[in-house]
Length: 467
Image (cartoon, rainbow, N blue to C red):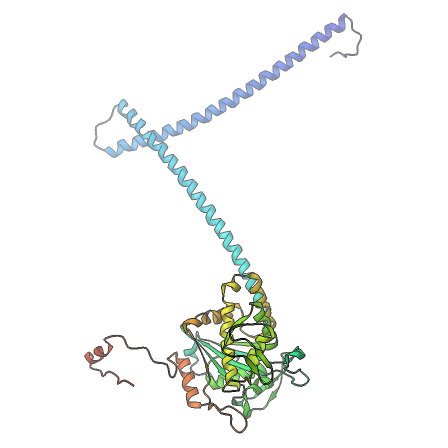
């Protein structure tokens, strides 16, 4: 090879001609090699196509052979007829291939869709599980139940029933001066100003909510002393006769009041819900208020004017709290706990309707606010999301009369100790009907099916006389 900086003479020119010739030869060689590579690639493609064609021809021959074999005793065809059969079979095979490809694409799309749905369901389930776990973690658990109590009657017959003991605890902890309810220095501890027992049978066809007067006279069993500030149980307090129902909660807390109600009712209480009335108003505000109907302005002897309007009134905050607290309302014939229990039942029904409305259930902010307020003012045992949904869904038929509110049967007048006294026979009949899931006392039994009387006569049995 020559250097371009060499002196230009004849020898150098000759050498440069040789270099140029070699360069052109090398370029031509590279071009030939590239063309040869392209020819090899085209040949490989042709071979591949040939193999595909040969495979298809083989399929055609196979189909034609099978057709000949199926004819059995038919005369042997000559080559022209065989070719004709092969030409007829080929289009059918191509259609089959198209159909197979189409089926394959459909199957693949179905699998992709199924996988996508499975992933979405998994994600949704995970989100729902996470939300449910979070909601459950908000509730303040405290020991309250005694599901193995000897007071429970016909325990096997109550399997599947749901019994919620709902306590309204009117503690003065955190109360403001303008609420006119006192404070912890004057009224320490906690009282069960509201005691309700919600019974939902296994078939979920009805729900019965029974209120107990706070001044109901009871025989309080032995109970462990309860500290409402810490939620802890301590030394055993001796049993006592002729005391008020609210003393059971003040002395022995949730466990003690559960024992008392199970002794009276014989029901297996499997859920305890305690609600602090001071935090109760947060629940009402979270759902945008609760509507109640009043025929005349409502004024209480201790709390003053509560509602100035008449008709349907939306209650919020302290006004809602005073509505359920008021005990001595002017114009109330009972002027006692009986009128208050009726108002509390009305308010509870309205609160449940508001909570289960689309405005709350479909509003994440309102629903979360309600759960937070409920958890902040609630304590108990076995009161997770699933259990509360069972209670709420059973209450959803309020307008259709699926829920019946009542008060435990009492004499109606306080005795010398100022206590309300149970009507024992009526009380036992009421709870026996709940345990046996039969019509409540005073309810008309279902009419017999048409022709039932005639069937009894035909069977030789006498029809029962009308009551």
